[in-house]
Length: 415
Image 1 (cartoon, one colour):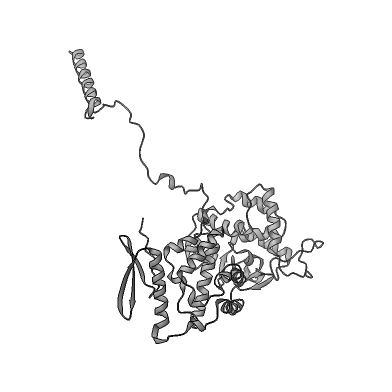
Image 2: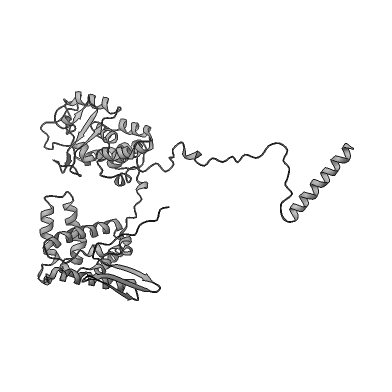
């Protein structure tokens, strides 16, 4: 197993080393190498954080008075307001600041936040039984926030960058992506499709056969479907009842699966093949779109309700629409020997490391070659087997005497 490379600190953040029972702090100051030792690692980390902060204040002779900067609550209000216009997660960021970050750091000046205070915040939140993943989201949001106020000149450095690995391990996610449920058998996919009513069955099979996100499926337009060319252009998604840009802000081409093509052809004839693929249906028009419906797009909650009833009717485990579509597509792709690089392009991932979270295999699934990778002939020997007399101890001597007695007996019979 390859040795994992240690995480490199940011340039100028110093280094902490250990020698015997002492912990050393190494840093550069005015072009000279400095080194001091302390009795505990925690003390060394606090000293290093203080040194880095003081060096940032005096860097380039600026000598800025950070005590005149506003507190973090004031800076965060303006930052969240700007973020509302540019980021899809702005609502979650505002909620995390209101519930967790604001009460802990809102009254502080930016320069007062250091690695020690961040560790106490992490330990307190974990003691409150907050999920480590949520704590990690808070720390990453705080790091992004500090990057913004550093550019504005309100903070000397980003305290999250000086967190040691021991602190980062505290909020490491404990969720195992391989435990995420999905439809493991193709027959279950067919049963679920037949159990769902229209248009929920078409929404489900479209997401399962293309790997699109739920918002991308509900925001799909007929102009982006190329039935003769067997390809789908994903360029927008539905969120809060409105069309908006994709999560990764880049459009992509998805292949139109052979089993999905006839379903879309029939759906095009039934709906007219113009406008959005999925719109609220009129109850008395034979399943045709309701033009006068106040909502232009189908809400995800209505699809989830229909899916929950169908899963119960098929006696399948409880799953979300995301797990039944995107997770199932990625897992089935890998189980059938598909390329991970192609899967990353279809799902819209910039690297295969993100794709690995979706392409988890069934717990009892192995390829046909997995059972014969270490082939050894362990069959028992056949025919006359002669015991070797070179075995050590009394057992070897006994076997040797028995062989000699047998040879003498055979010779006397032949004579």
